[in-house]
Each structure stands twice: as structure tokens, then as C-alpha cells.
Image (tube, rainbow, N blue to C red; front, side, top):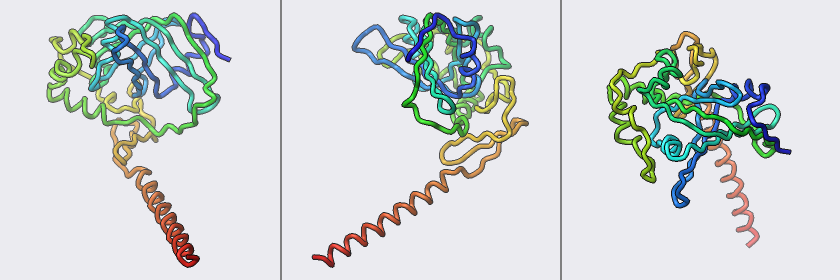
Length: 265
């Protein structure tokens, strides 16, 4: 049976912080406009400030729906789901505030030593209700690692001094024309980040588990504790061989059935 709380129960906090992915849902006021749901990954992006206030580091993407919707009406829901262990779904209902790169509030939450490549805003949520439900229908998934491609791309773009131009082109309004980024793309300050945090599996303190793997484009990147990475062939190659073997076996069975029916005819 579902349960509701006015604040985040203390025993929920470690579980929330452990999750490697969560979802953010927002919507504009116009009933004809688009509702948005976005998955959020990259280790240690989510933070709990108090039983009624959380925030996450918002990274650059091709869309900017969450920021635009929050600027219009502030409504937001975060969803966390268990993919291992006991089933659990937790929703954080609240009002969101956008603190863009270049603002004092952003600097207070994300100093340069904690900033990820491509970080464009801190999204702060004042939670007014917490919902718990069973999650019995959610399947088990094994976590393999965070994808590296987003941070790699952002790192290259920032070092080429093209990120703010990208924000100006792509992130100033939603797909429905609502205003989004207002100051980040014109902020007169350098885009800096801690070198260790360009690895998606890195924790906020820069530590990287020894045997984490990022599955990207059929290859894995093993992140070492010293911050270096080494590319290796991922399990997708083995899966591809298995798929071909299954397809071949099915083909043989189909041919045998065809020959048998031809003989009967």
C-alpha cells in the first residue's frame, strides 16, 4: 500500500543517494504543450540538503524542458526506483528553482572543484510531499556503469570555448517556446571543472571505483582509481555472437520444418 510523508524520512536518504539514476517530471501550464520526463544519471549528481530540500547538478543536453517549465510554474516531481534488492518507488513532489551557471547560488552549490563538464545549472527542489509505493512490477537490472559520452562531449566543447555559444543556440527556450536559460550563456566567467570529475563514474570527491565500466557504443571504458581510463571490448561482442548463433539455429529449424512439410506434400 502506498504511503505519503510531508518530508523525506531519514532512513530513505541513504537509499536515495545510492541510486545511479532518477527521473524528473515537469509540465507547462498550457494543456496543449508537452509534458516532459527526463532521466538523470552521472554519479553523485543528486544531493539532500534537508528533509524538505534537495538539489541536483543539471548537465547540458539538447533539450532544456525542465528549466523552462520550472521558470514558468515551478512544479516538479523526482522519481527513484529500486532495480535491486527489495522493490521500492519513491517520488519527491515539490517546487523547483533554477540557479544557472554564473549566479551566486550556483557557485555556492557547485564550486569549481565539484563542477562537472557541461554543468549549466543547479536545480533546487523544495519538497512538500514524499510518496512511497511498492514497485512490484519494476524488473531487476544490473548496473554496469555510467555512460561516458556526455561528459566527453562537454569536455571537448568547453575546452574549445564553444559551450556558451551552444547554450545560446539550443538552451534558451523549450520546444513550446517557453524561456529557459537566461544568464548562463552570457556569463562572463571561465567554464572550469575538476579533472577527476570528467569521468562519469567518479564520485563528487573525485574517487573512482577500480572496477566500474561504462558501456558506450559497444565498448567499455574501465575507470581506474587514479583517474585514468582504458578502453576494452565490451560484452556486446559476445552477445552479438550469441544472437547470430540463435538466428542460425532458428534458421536450421525452419529449414527442417520446410523440408518435412515438402516431403509430406
